[in-house]
Amino acid sequence: PRLTLLQYQLLYGAPAGPPDRFVAEALAATTNGDLTAITITTPYGPNEAAGRELVVDLRADVGPLAPPEGLEVLVGGGAADVEDVVAGIAADFPRTAAFILVSTYLVLFLLLRSVLLPLKALVMNSLSIAASFGALVWIFQDGNLGAILGTRPLGFVETTQPVILFCVLFGLSMDYEVFLLTRMRETWDTTRDNRAAVAHGLERSGRIVTSAALIVVVVAGSFAFADIVLIKALGLGIAIAVALDATVVRALLVPATMRLLGHWNWWVPGRLAARLPDIAEHAVDPEVRG
Image 1 (cartoon, rainbow, N blue to C red):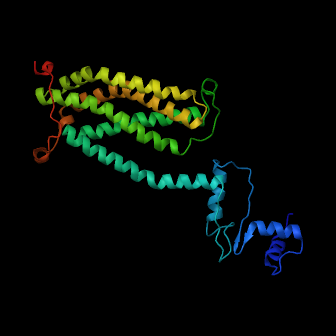
Image 2 (image 1 turned 135 degrees about the vertical axis):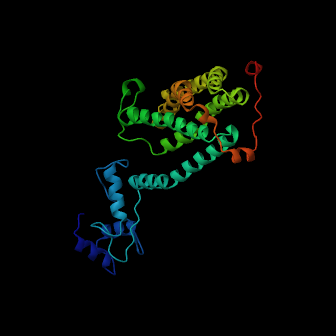
């Protein structure tokens, strides 16, 4: 029954319990000592912003929905679960991303013995990953290509998708970057000619990068036939990012920026260069020596 606030206070405040047997059974099912379970029904879905805002308001210490002094409100349910996951990822992901970026930069710095090349590699990787995120929003959030992929507009992107894609794609993209830049470094160590290093690196690593990327695109793209939206989105996100990375980024942007930077690609402070360990003994091809 719909009761007023005063009636609820009388109901829960009666020492002997309510006189009605059915009301007493309902009260026993929702109350245990100083704990009471209250079900709130709203027209909002668990992923809608209004539903998550309601969770925040219910948990707030001040505001129109704040509990009276001495009471503690614990909110559960679908919207609360989504809010907790989003808040947890928002709090932890920046530290995770910073660790990946810093550790990757340091490893590439030691491998390539350059200050700018590792930084450029991080920027190029971020471009393909950002393009993948944009494609997911365009396809799954906005509902484009729904007739082909069998999807409908969701109005949102699953919270865990960007995190998973970032970690997976960063590793894949960095593999291709290492293939390309190590070849360029080999030529640079021998010729000290930046233009020749860029050309030779593209020539010697192009087929490897293209073949590896093609395999990943085919395998990941097959996930588009899955019925589960999360699997479909992850597969398409990986396929799109790898395809862009192996074509637009590695074939166009990387060599173009390296040509523009010239000798600055290989710059490292003199004192620091003398102390750096040579962790990569570059095996130079006979073609380069000639």
